[in-house]
Amino acid sequence: MEIMTVSLNNVTYPIYLDYPLEKIGNLFHKHQCGKKVLIITDENVAKLYADTVIKSVSSVKNVHLSVVKPGESSKTIKVAYQLIKACSLFGMDRTDTIIALGGGVISDLAGFVSAIYLRGIRFISIPTTLLAQVDASVGGKTAINLPWGKNLVGVFHQPFFVVMDFSTLESLPEREISQGMAEIIKCAVIRSKKLFALLQNVPHTDTRKYFKFFVRECVSIKKRVVESDEKEEKGIREILNFGHTIGHAIEINSNLLNHGESVALGMLGETFLAVERNFCSYLLFEKVRALVKKYGLPVKCDVSVKKVSRSLMFDKKTRGGKIRCVMPVRIGAVKTGVEISTEEVISNWEKWQ
Ligand SMILES: NC(=O)c1ccc[n+]([C@@H]2O[C@H](COP(=O)([O-])OP(=O)(O)OC[C@H]3O[C@@H](n4cnc5c(N)ncnc54)[C@H](O)[C@@H]3O)[C@@H](O)[C@H]2O)c1
Ligand SMILES: [Zn+2]
Image (cartoon, rainbow, N blue to C red; front, top):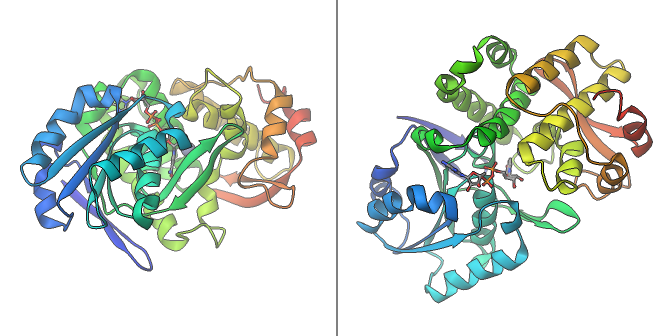
């Protein structure tokens, strides 16, 4: 077990890495968490891990379980309302705690509910997907979607603490592993030459052996970025959006592609635009594409570019009608706030696929 601490202006919280789920109850002795605990999870995760967490936590707290449908379709105001109702019916007060047990959908949704119920109660994040461990569970961004755009309603609300049990990754299907690998590739491109080289060299069959290392490296990068720009006001945190401008526009228009797959395509699209602007070399684009392919992510997109360009206008990062994205300069370094036009996206669409 290892503890990393995230130190922000008004709050400091620990991330317990490699901490067994069955011992989570012990952390409730250590941290003041009120009397009642609502565990929010989805149907898949409930079957696998809810009993373990309930058993451990109910030895010290009064526990209630709320289970939502798996997937992005649960990140809605309707589901958030049902969860708020569950908090209220359970009689939770401001001293009580919500546990988000699951992937990024659950941490975004449960985080959002805990941020707005009674103007904010504590939430503990227990990420069970690779993507949520390397990215979604750290940093305090919570959100739900609107039908025309991802994460358009949300609040910054930092977790009380985060617990990662790497053994939960063993039940994760390959496609979900690939999703997480997309965010790991993103971390490498924006901040870590060392991680990028490792991703290139690891034999594909051994990927799972390196999860602990990947998670530690990405959490440590994300922690440092969030510590220097908690609310994305200084242009530093923006680097984490690499691949996400075009990626979100793809994701919202696709019934087939998940977040990681869309971000992988977004990274390729945005890196290609960087090549066109002479910010980076074509070789760099080829290296990123090779990693995307190696980790089972798509390199071609069958979503219509017209739909993508329309959605780009609704992106959160769009300011004054200008679409903004992050572009790589070299491995480990990026340029933020680069303005792009829909025409530029459309005219280059075929070229990077
Ligand atoms: N807040 C942030 O900073 C941030 C960062 C990145 C992504 N996100 C959000 O995260 C979401 C994507 O996260 P995700 O990929 O974890 O999606 P997810 O939560 O939908 O999980 C993916 C699938 O894996 C299943 N699952 C979860 N854990 C499992 C396990 N241990 N074993 C077997 N199956 C398991 C889930 O039931 C689901 O079907 C998106 O909504 C994205 O916007 C948020
Ligand atoms: Zn992401």
